[in-house]
Structures are given as structure tokens and as C-alpha cells.
Length: 115
Image 1 (tube, rainbow, N blue to C red):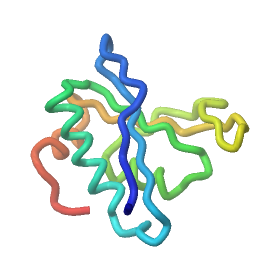
Image 2: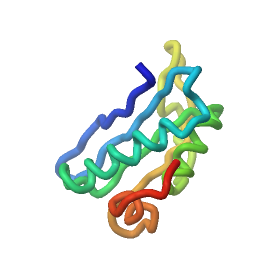
Image 3: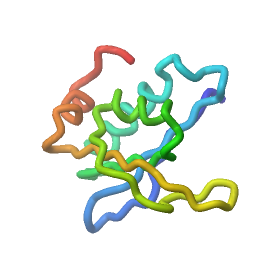
Image 4: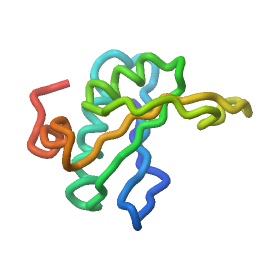
């Protein structure tokens, strides 16, 4: 397995969810996360009809933050104690992609020029 992308915490009434991704260490830095996430984002917007995907990333995870930025996600702020890792609450940076309103979301739905 190379890695995975997930959609979780779907709130159907507001048509929003969280997007996550991870990649095995030997495949990191090769554009795998962005490539897979773009496909899942497209599915979420076109098929599931979601309007917003949030990416909640540990403040010390620069690599995942770069992926979020590569996807065109907009940084919204830092949420205090938003995630738990090794049974410790940690702050997280919150990014979001919306279907309408973000230029990046349109590029996700119409195709991509690579990772």
C-alpha cells in the first residue's frame, strides 16, 4: 500500500466533511497525496454534492500543509486542541476547499496538469 485518502465527519445537512491523507514514508515527496486527494475532492464535489472539505493538520506537519496548499486549500486558522495524537490534544491548522468560490476547486473538477 502506498497510502490513503479519507473523507470523514460528513455533515450532510451542511454538505461538509473533513479530508485526510497519508503516505508511506518511502513514497513521500512524490506528489502521491495531492494526486489521490484531487480525485477524492472531485468525487466529493461531483458525486456526493459536498460544498466544503476541511483539512485539519497538526501545526508541526509542514509536509501535509504543503499538500493542502498545493490542492489550493485556503488557510483559515489554528484550532486549539483540535486533534489527538498519542493520547495528547494538539493544536491543528485548519484549511478548507469549497466547491464554489475557490479557483482551485474549479481546477480540481475540470482536470489537473499534474502533481
